[in-house]
Amino acid sequence: MAAHLLLFVLFFDFSHSHTFLNPNRTPHWKNDDPNQGPFFGQPEQVHLSYGGSPNKIIVTWLTFDDTLDSIVEYGETEQLLSNVKGNCSLFIDGGELKTRRYIHRAVIEDIKPGTKYYYHVGSECGWSSVFTFKGLEPRPDGGYRFAVYGDMGNINARSLGKLQRLAQKRDFDMVLHVGDFAYDMDTKNGKFGDEFMRQIEPIAAYVPYMTVVGNHEEAYNFSHYANRFSMPDSEHSFFYSFDIGPAHIVGFSSEFYFYTKYGWEQIANQWNWLLKDLKKAEKNRKNVPWIITMAHKPMYCSDFYGDDCKLYESVMRRGLPLTHAYGLENLFFKYGVDLEIWAHEHSYERMFPLFNRTVYNGTDSPYVNPPAPVHVVTGSAGCQEEVVPFEKHPPPWSAFRSSLYGFSRMQVFNATHLYFEQVAAAGDDVIDSFWVVKNRHGRPTQNDKKKLETFGSRIPFNYCHHESHNCHPNGL
Image (cartoon, rainbow, N blue to C red; front, side, top):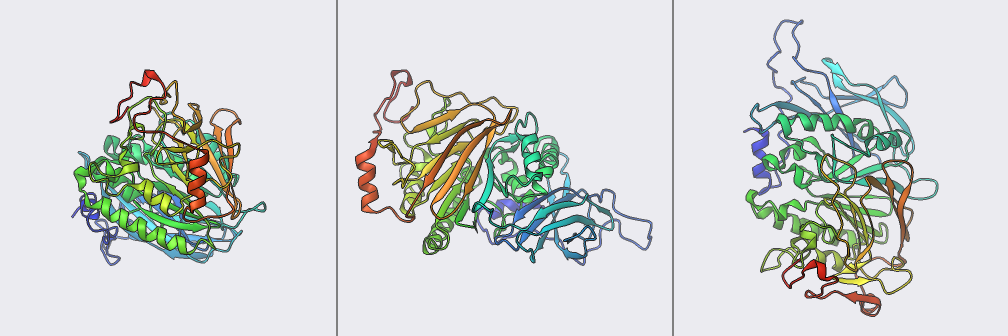
């Protein structure tokens, strides 16, 4: 069965992994002639991802022919004295040409914190350039620093150059790409996806590049996303989590709620996984206090277009129509999620802490011990589509918004302090910045609920914050 078709099975049975090729296989070019080799054996599109612990990193790359071997040579010097062998899977694009791509994955498991490593990938049929990465360790001022953004294409990728430069200067330790890549990866039989992966190589070959799926990856049941990326402890990269320093980061798919033509069971599968993961994270909050979620389509926004985040009955917030099953807002509030990162809207927007349309904005310091999660939309990295315009009169939950292309940076310093800022793609301006300070993490207490009641503004379903919005009880 072709790899792109296997993804249809994945939505119903996540026990299926990537279809790794038999290591004892005989490639089409292999025979007794020592002069014969593969047609296209040069590795490309090299990228790293966090392996789930600081001593482990996943290396992924692509060739257009079967090279038989998948090898990473690495070391603390340019002699690259160590090596690890990986696996290879065949990905057949769903386009007209049914282009075959060979995806190679290998795991390095003996990384020392703070140590610089040199590495390259390939086989006797071809080797990549030599890249470097540094074993993850907390920064001198505390914690880890992340670049955070979504919605970056390979046309007008306005933030790309700055991200490439900063990644190689170790300005941040990890990237969180919150959905929508290339616009679109499947375009021209996957050539857009190949070009995008080449463009991010100067970032992703140097720092771990962590991802979640967006609506622009939908083609062929999201097969380009699932095959090209390798997230930790996941056989599909749609939902997963990891601890890094004081933060537990949860990536999941918002798209399961919107592309039900591929089935409904994936919503329940993800929900059950989220519930199990949050329960486990709750028990570990003494060691890893912050819980941060990331997915593509937001629960709240103030953009002009009628996306789900504009609706009173948002599927992401409230769950499936009529039944409200699998709604995420109550789940995340119950387990005390601290920060929710979204994209999709081609803009940047910071919200006041809020839950169930109650906005915690009646105090001078809303982000100090907030009684509800903080939402941020950061989908303005740059692409060929237009910047999303804002409503002239935003709803009360909108604290700051900008239509300038750029990206976010986040640093989780310690158990109590998290810093977040938005940086312009053009120039070095910091457009917005804020601190979230929490002296206690965990489930909301009665005191939290009282604070939300006392200093919060309840926005009822029939509330119309400006006559131009033509509000009615079922939506905007």
